[in-house]
Length: 189
Image 1: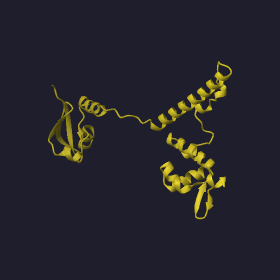
Image 2: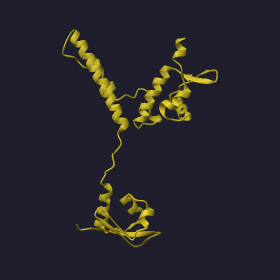
Image 3: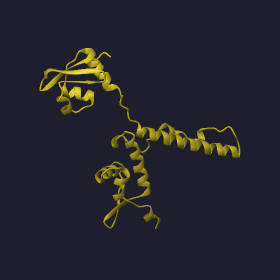
Image 4: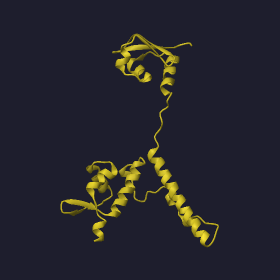
């Protein structure tokens, strides 16, 4: 009876991991997990689910299936509470060990969350720096480049003979291939 309770339907795994069923089966294959058939449905064990969760954590941290090994652990999880020597003895020592264990779990959770969520933030002034550089260098840019720097569509930009934004004037000055060419000058205020 307990074995049936420990079985997890593979049909529930796509929602758990945010992938389609073929992606689930690729993960199962990579971990050499054999599904168990009961009628028309297939299942995995709770232990297999833990292994899949470890693989998912690895993938969420930017790894790939081919480089995953089940012994992959961060340096924090390699720390053991027994390797940390509490100063106190007796009941205080067990409380200190428990506290250290909780702290390690908390630190590991924080590190995992940071690793999953770290995305480089775009420079909010990067496009203006690009405009300044193009102006300083005297570059003649095409409509596509100017539209990207101004964060406008090419279509809305092409209807103007000149436009002023961010302290710069952009003036059409001929053609740059099939696009209009634009000269950039800094406005003096």
